[in-house]
Image (cartoon, rainbow, N blue to C red; front, top):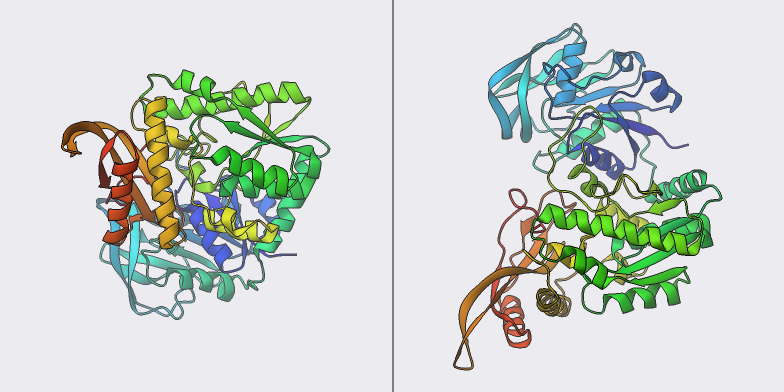
Length: 512
């Protein structure tokens, strides 16, 4: 049986990133609600506990608090940021609010011998995001490192195996952060590091079978990585009791419907029904310009279409979705501890309360790169697994402003040209995403000695590891020139092409 590290979620947008870093060390991690009882963790046989960061302060009246008995289980506990402050506060140390919030990079100076920081340089750059700090340690603890704003940036109670970090080791901004996590797992928790994605596949198949039983599942198959892997995984678990549905919502890329049908219906022999619903979606989106309204309309209509399909094919109990964790953490607040809403995702934020189907989201705890590894285990082809992410609302969130057939046609043709040139140059598989955005802005141009007054296409090309942060790609000028020239010459209605050079944050990857 695999060893498990429990990650208690206090609302940090880095909670899943912590879990992911643990898995990168080949140790299984499982996220629990912050209020999970110590008895449940003991029953699950966890060999270590991580308390995530979070947006709250220990001084807040409704601050999320864990079961204090977790510190008496005899298993190592690592508190990160808010988790360190919680541990200090609950074990009778002293935390204070500071006048100057410590956010961003600072220098960590190791001041004493430490189990947790073995092998770490004496001075490293770390990433902080906190407004409170520890000023007095609980009995039995010692401080082992400091920053300019905190004398207790790392703390340890070696006998009880309780540890705390004021900074975030899980983010790439912290130097040697993964080594710190590895120290906790191997040197403190005694983890063997023998867990793999093959184990996750086996566990997921079993979990799906237990949840679904002898019921039927319906899944919206887009042909993207997420829905494709979800379909293959569920099909592995329950076979023909999975009914895939491809909805042509009028917001697809060029020739997308034919490509999906050819791959899944003919090659993978899955039950696949194609629903042509372009007029329905575009009718409901007519005149809508607000991004949140667009997403909610698309999500609501998507479910309505599914309801119609369910009624036509008989009893179905579960709606499966390829929701990934970045979708969840940017959309949903955990119970009792709301995180800041960044955007609604059609899978997690736009579902009507009257939905009659139970949700099945087998990829909900995974990042995109983990999903691709899982897809390899399932035997999916390279062209599917390496396909760039595509938003659930499709081109609906890439046409800025009102969605019209004309604007969609312009964007679809421009996007296809960008896609062709990215593949031809070899850059398609080197970047995270490359796509075109239609702007409802017109500018004056000259084409064929005539004045034009046409729309603008923006190229968005970014590199990322997990969609949590992203930077724009410095694509060679020759490729950009080719793309721009082709779009302006071949797409009627465009006379200007621009390049988005914004990072995330402060911008998001998608424009809406």
